Image 1: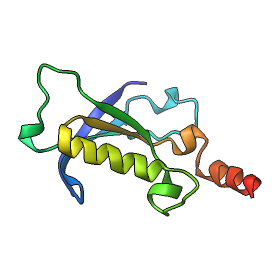
Image 2: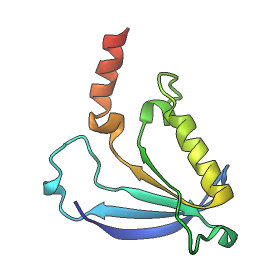
Image 3: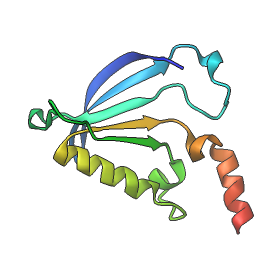
Image 4: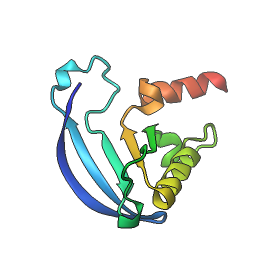
Amino acid sequence: PPASFVAETALPTSFGLFRLRAYRVDNVDAISNPYVGTEPCVIYGADPRMRISGRDVPVRVHDQCVTSEVFGSQRCDCREQLRMALEFVAREGGIVIYLQQEGRGIGLANKVAAYAMQE
């Protein structure tokens, strides 16, 4: 579903200075999956030398992964993928679209249950 722009801010990180743009889904009732968030965001390099003009824009679409990105789980490489994408954007330009859909849309609790089944 379409999303509307909410706000933009500077985002200083260990990878460099970025801009963070937040959006909100216009019609949350149109989302049929209850495990998908309603506030995607876009991160792009704030360095004016990294402005991309007249060429293709590198884009990374990244799904939220709390277990890896927050808790440091080693069951997946999501944290490393996000880190590599942010390092690339800081160095070369481009954007990262960050989506709130844990476990590719299965939700955190279901992801933990899937991990438990693998034990």
